[in-house]
Amino acid sequence: MASIEDVSKAVEVTAKYAWAIGVAIAFVLFIPKDAAEQIGILTIRKEYQGFLWIGLVISMALWLGAAFKYIEKITTKFYSARIKEKEKKLTKERNLEMYKLRLQSLHLEERTWIACCLYFNHQTMFAERGTASAASLVQKGILVPGEGSIFRLPYTIKDNVWQYLLENRSEFITDNEIANPQVQQNLSRFRNELHN
Image 1 (cartoon, rainbow, N blue to C red):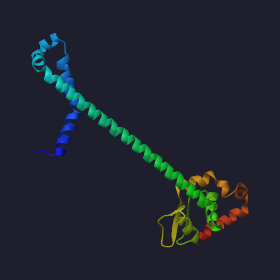
Image 2 (image 1 turned 90 degrees about the vertical axis):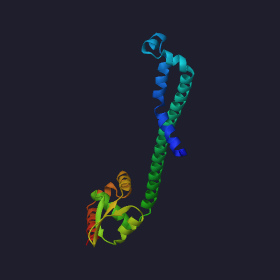
Image 3 (image 1 turned 30 degrees about the horizontal axis):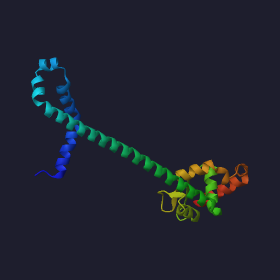
Image 4 (image 1 turned 45 degrees about the vertical axis):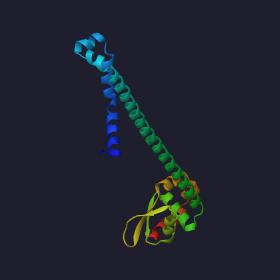
């Protein structure tokens, strides 16, 4: 005995090709009388007209059902993708707000790390494993440690944070500081001390 699933699949396949059946029945029903007589389907139309009409109605109903189901599927997929995209964007914006708050509350060594990256335009800096400022920036979700040697690792500022830092560079290092040779010396010393 056929299961409900088998019947459902059979209906689905029938619905898929119902338009073709409907077109064939419509052809038999609506072809002009002279043409129908010439190709020998006039007698079929006369004898089975009632069944043909029933077949046309059923096939069109199945086709419309399949068409609406397809439209619903496409619409659901489209709106689902839009909702996911919106949620992704919202999460990204929330994360950025969180990073902004964290960047505003950095201690001196963490701010120096950020200033150093911006000054030398390096998104990644190397430091000894376990460096306090790197570890705290990793903990805050600003830096991501990469793979390196036992003692030395590359630490990279996350892309969206780096983008924000570049757009708001002056909050972390001003133009006057960039032009100051003493600042350059201090930042170079800080960078060198990270992996010495």
